[in-house]
Amino acid sequence: MNTTRPTAVVTGASAGIGAATARVLAEDGFHVVLGARRLDRLTALADEIDGTPISLDVTDAESVEAFVTRVPECRVLVNNAGGARGLERVDAADEDDWRWMWEANVLGTLRLTKALLPRLIASGDGHVVTVTSVAATEIYDGGAGYTSAKHAQSALHRTLRGEHLGDPVRFTEILPGMVETDFSVTRFGGDADRAAKVYEGLTPLTAEDVAEVIGFAVGRPWHVNLDQIVMKPRAQASASRAHRE
Image (cartoon, rainbow, N blue to C red; front, side):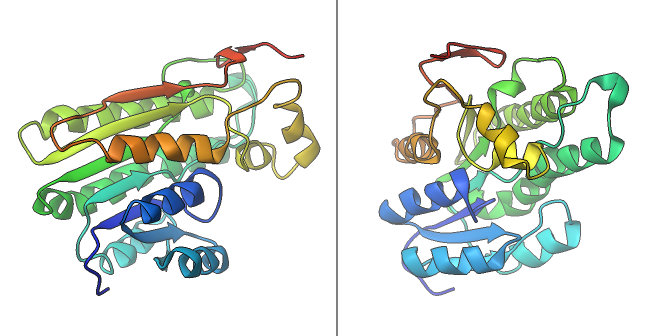
């Protein structure tokens, strides 16, 4: 990987917030290393932004290990991979869905951050951005698997802020509300009609809205740390309350 540009790693970069973030960071002068399972999509995006596509499954420790060996230096890490599966009550919980959510959101963030922190610190101006959710601070019926994973992911990220106080690395948590991406399609097992109903009657955030905020946080001077940024559509007050026309 020969480049004079600083390197930014974006996980979950094949679509949605990850892909939009990769474009923003590339425009801001970074060489972007894109990680996700869908290598065909990564390759197309990498061609567009002159980035590096590398297959990555954050739920698989061996995949993460193989990925990081191909990233010799890193100034920015965007932990974006994750997601939700199912919307069942606790008394009907599917353990496999819960296990995947904890692996993807919590352990995936742990694996990438732990592996790349030495390189982020060595850059002299590292930055870890973790995309959690308003579900990291709220709960709602049927969401215990996802909200518990996001609470844990947020706690992991915020702990790093204190553990690395004094090191040349910043930590920013982005907590989006409703964003119209593949999120709900994944949650509902590919049911696009059910997913579309989540956003009916209001204008949700777009992946680009979130990406622009990530780019803004990364672009602040080295001494400015934006600890947490909560962003929602104007029509959304909380994880369970929104105004619909």
